[in-house]
Image (tube, rainbow, N blue to C red; front, top):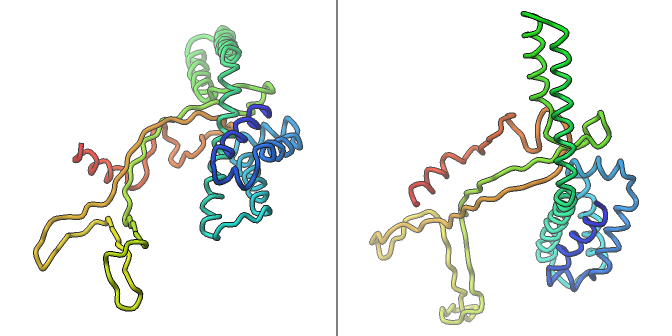
Length: 263
């Protein structure tokens, strides 16, 4: 896992042409390897089940970039560092997923063994009882087995992490989207020589010379995807708010009605 994460993080961060001028690829690899090698196997597994591993590694790499004192304005620097944070998180996730995929056959075998052991346990337990008692025991075992996460017991009998996949749908709109051309010289301005053109997309009526022309609709976006990662054990999964398999944000149904009307 360490080797996979090192290569994935190095590739993601170095793929940014701006960042590659501020911190060299070999330095990203060395910093990432130094951090991961400082962790024990137990610490690596524990931190990888939460956001801690990616957050700590991202903080270290961003500090390296800040210490290099790149020639950039503060706003530009923070924007690039936000991109670096995302790159590191993607690299960590891809590294963990690469290990999971490469060990897919082993995982399938282990999952099969776990399933068989649970079924054998249920059969052996029920064989000891009969009638109403057996029915109650069976129902209780069914509830217990349903609560077992679909994951890998790395250190039996304790569940260290689980492998999960989510599908997601994102919809939204920019409340205000502005593009400014400061180098444009076709709009004269008495004191400053010229005025930059500005294009604004916002939800409002368009009126010219007191004549209604139409509506200026905001920019909207929509995309679907999936995410596979390793998470820690527990009654709730990562990001669960209501404990349901399908969850929606507050504005989801409103945006769905808008997108549904546009399709």
